[in-house]
Structures are given as C-alpha cells and as structure tokens.
Image 1 (cartoon, one colour):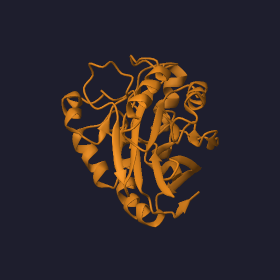
Image 2 (spheres, helix red, strand yellow; image 1 turned 90 degrees about the horizontal axis):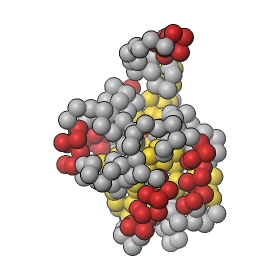
Image 3 (cartoon, one colour; image 1 turned 120 degrees about the vertical axis):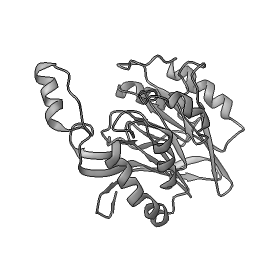
Length: 266
C-alpha cells in the first residue's frame, strides 16, 4: 500500500513550527510516500509567501495547496508562478497566475492534486466547483495514476455532494477551510476516500486558530478587531489514506492527529 497524508490548513507560526518539528519523523515512522498540505493560512493566519512556502516544503511536504486566502499577502501574485510545488484553486479565473494542479511522484506512482473552491458562503470569485472538477479530472486522466481533489468550502452539503459527484473517478475528495476535523471519514463506492474537513494544523486553544477574546468581542458588538493567531494546544491534523497502487483506489482513510510533544494519535 502507498500512504498519503493530506494536512489541513497550516495556521501561522504555531502551525509551521509543529510541522517542522514533527513531520520529518512522522514521514519516517509512518512510511509516508506523499505529503500534501494546505498552506493558505501560513502567513500570520492569512495567505502565504514564497519564503514560507519554501520552509514548508523543506519540512517534508511534497505539494502545497491554497484556498480563498490565496492573494492575501502582498506580492504573492508575482511569486506564485515561480513555485513549482504550489497550486492555487483550479476554479479561479484562468487569467490568475499560478498552477491549477500539481503532479507528484514516489515509487513510480504519480499523484495529481488540485483544489476547487466552494461557492456557498464564500466570497472569492470562482467558477462552478463541480464543472471545474470534471474538467480537471478529464485533463489529468492519463497524466497520473491517482487524483486527489481538495474542496475548500464552507458548506458541508457542498463538500459531500462533490464527494459523491466524483465517487469512483478519483482516489480522494478531501475538505478543508472550516478548520474543524469531522468524524465522517469513509471510502465511497469506487474506492474514493472522503472526509468533509481534515482539520487545521495550528493552535486549537482558540477560535479556528485565533485568540479567543477578540473573536468573542466581535460577536458581541460587531466592531472590527485584529485577530491574532493563538498559541495553545498546537496540533497537526490531516487525513491519512492508504492507496492500492494496482487499482489506484483508496482502501482506508483515517483522521491523523499529532499534538505538540505527544506521540501520534489515531
């Protein structure tokens, strides 16, 4: 079996630090063939830079995906085209810079990965994720052995619907964006692994990775505040998938959680 770990949204320095501390050993201990990570919150919780992307790749990540915060950092639109292992959402306008998919390889097995943004409760301009996913799957067929689809979306119904829409055509459909790991990991008919949200890699002693007090204040009075990245209970969260190389089907999917200073938990 091939093992692939898809890591949820890396949030700020705490998320980057635990990745640097734990991922190299985790790759060795778990025998991971592929590691993909969403890095759209890596820069102080919003966006990413070329320097941070390189540091994440240096930790042992093979490919970085992005989401609705893709353009939050000034100048990134000029850097992204030079980052060969970073891709932006595939259903953004075609004029946007950056790769719309990546292909990574290990042990002679090629994995294609791309992200689609949901449109329900999301503000970034994007094409239909269902039609964009169809287009990307057709484009990647023949170029790789397995296809991993990330759906970066708010609505659980939209993520679940996309999972069923692609069931049997891709190896995995994995949700990100809400930062809360869900308990619905399953292998759908046709060997497609699915999970509504793989969680975040960052501080859980907060509100979706941010300090508690200003978030509560914003809910109480609606006044704008700066949401600093929290620091406590830092974890790596992701989906661990076992793939049959002969059939390119997912055989198993589990939530993987690693707490700072703790041993690996399933």
